[in-house]
Amino acid sequence: MFDPAIIFSQIASGLVLGGLYVLIAIGLSIIFGLLGIVNFAHGAFFTLGAYLALTLFQYFGWPAVILAPVIVGAFGMLAETLLIKRLYDKEPLVSLIVTFALALCIEATVRLIYGGIGQPFNPPPFLAGFYIWGPVLITKYRVAVLLTTAAVLIGLWLFLEHTPFGRILRAGSRDPEMVGLLGINLPRVLTWVFGLGCAISGIAGVLAAPLWTVTPAMATNAIMPAFVVVAIGGLGSFAGAVIAGLLVGVVIALTIQYYPEASGAVMYLFMALMLLLRPRGLLGERWERFE
Picture 1 (cartoon, rainbow, N blue to C red):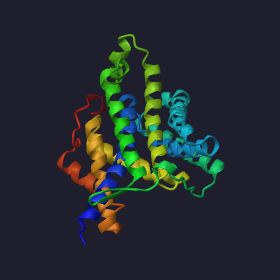
Picture 2 (cartoon, rainbow, N blue to C red):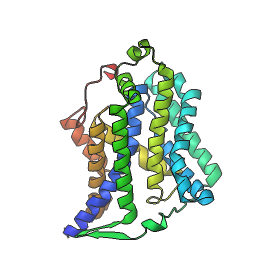
Picture 3 (tube, rainbow, N blue to C red):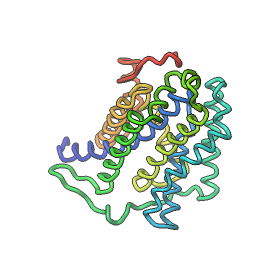
């Protein structure tokens, strides 16, 4: 029953799934850390990325798919300018309700344009087939997703740690008032941060589109795992989100193989256990502005 080949193959698939969860969770964490907004529409931007990738592919071919996250990020910036910025001084419940309504609006618009039936989206022809490394059997596209996810995360880490804007972002997540007093245009920073978080979610949607059926309701399969990953990894911890996302992906993949009936609940049980042991998450820190 416990065939090593199956176990290693499931772990590899779980790392791919976990990598997608990490991308979604990182964008969610960035927005919450700096803006203090619980963005329940984050999964809708994931869905938007998948549908834009599908549309760009149909009309312009595979090279145009790279524009999908850029468009999602621009739409996020527009949403922040017109709607989200009005929520910064409101109660957290208000932002939760408004972003939930935004998610429903985006999903309804997608259904109106594309219909409610799922649409298949095949990987590029040059990524068809499998790789076999010893006991591990994995599709070429999943390997490409894993490598792309790693590249995006490394690039994002370098951006946050070694660029002036990244330093402003990290400082603003701790003390936005002080950043404003230093003469930095904080409202403009907030707009760009919201767009960045949405664009990262859009990247996850583009990568997930050939793995999942592209449907208007696919946001549900993205937003809840993202909240779980943020809770397990710890608010504000980049490394914590990466570790938690990969762990959640592997746990889900192994559960699907050996106990599929529990695959929908296992990540919540994992989160509950982790929060009992470490209430702030794996690598969570104390954030005064949220305590």
